[in-house]
Image 1 (cartoon, helix red, strand yellow):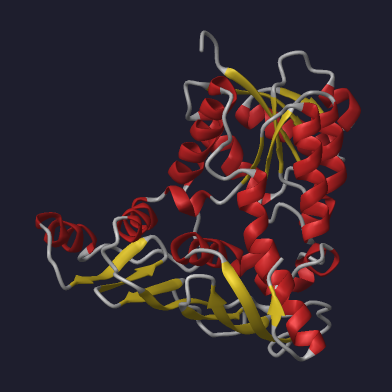
Image 2 (image 1 turned 30 degrees about the horizontal axis):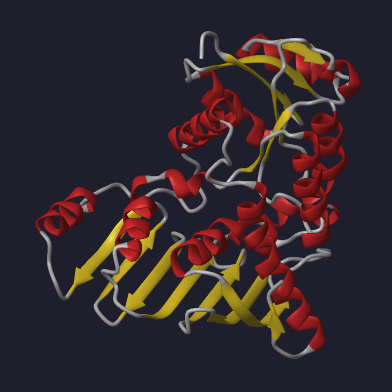
Length: 341
């Protein structure tokens, strides 16, 4: 690629800062524009990161240097924004979740194919070293037959967090869709497709909340393994996200992005080095984000565009976690196990 690819961001909340920092750190990318409903916010953002500020999305899309649009608006607003960008020929990266229902995800996926543009969902946790090592070992068969695969997201969000960000209640997703979705994505990425879900959801630790702050599910994977998802935003003081993968020949545990247990019946020379790599590492705060991981995902999207291939987290891939959460909610409402769509 001769010149950096032109990126723009729409929706300038907290998560947009991570996108901008990752874009600005890449030699293959540059920020050419940012759009907010508030002109002052767009001006401040572009003064900090560069690019042209916009307070009108249609004007933003006319920027001739704009090739990739990062959608960082509240989740329930992703569809209309992304559709308009794709129909203008722009490639699109959507912050998690891709959308809040599988039907809305499907419309995004269908439109990307019709418009011949790349659609990617943000699951930057797949690009960290710990998850990549787990995925590689599973693909190599080192775990043997997978038996029990669990994800725990026990964080703490204050009442003020929800009072000050009421879009959580309007965007169509609570603790599952907005916080636990990264762990759910990693769990299904590691363990394979989920066949069925038996779920329960509740609002236990916060007042005046229209969405769940707690949820659990029992899973049956298509490969026969069983699993558990545990999620709450009401566990003081909050604990690292934890994913446990157990099999007949090995087991491993991931806390946030660090491997805290790595055990196999057939040891390899690299195993001790992997264990030592994570010993004594400073524990990340629960839910902390990694700018470098965003950069690696954006690099993959740029390469997907230039190489005319699907990105690692395509629209279809990003849809999978949404489908599991949708099944959990349906199971809780309908009071029976639900097959994952």
